[in-house]
Length: 236
Ligand SMILES: [Zn+2]
Image (cartoon, rainbow, N blue to C red; front, side, top):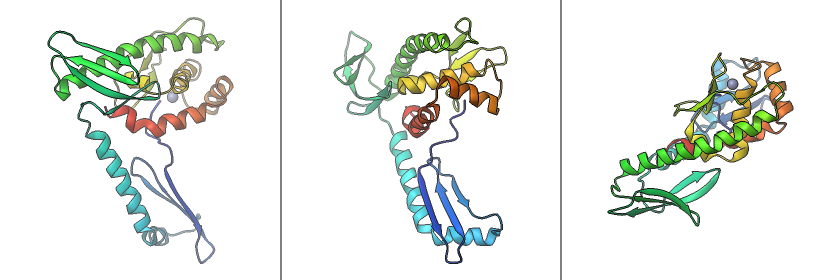
């Protein structure tokens, strides 16, 4: 399952003076899409875009600013961390003896001898992976039980991936991204379900989507939540 297709963020729609309708989409990944009637020439499409250049560039600036703020994580107390879709505040506690990560009263507390950003980042990555292992195992079992074509929980593993939340090999081996544990349970269930549907249909055909919909009628909503939060979940 790719997370490349992100939730539509900005949307502009109007009837042009000549009666033509045009739409401009600015996606959170910075992609700008112009939708015009079929008989529109490229020059006309460019004109539609140029007329709204200010609107488009303002949204692209917003995207850039948000991306920069997400990327500049310092791994210091007060920063936001996500776990199962909820926000937690990072608290770094220097210690000469202890090393651990604990959740307490809305905080994720990292007690550490080395409080350099790199060390905290590594420690949190291990913690997410460990938590992911527990949560994913439980959800795999729960989701599998609802599916008549899954007789026993599939073979699975956790692996950090650059562009995927999950994958399913032709042999039926499922891989889940540890960052998925930052998302709400229903999103985790959706990714697991998506991969389990690939055990029956190894493609994204209409049969695949029928299977998905029968098992989780609200799957699109879960996907939208996941796509909308991709940047927050993935860049730390
Ligand atoms: Zn898929």
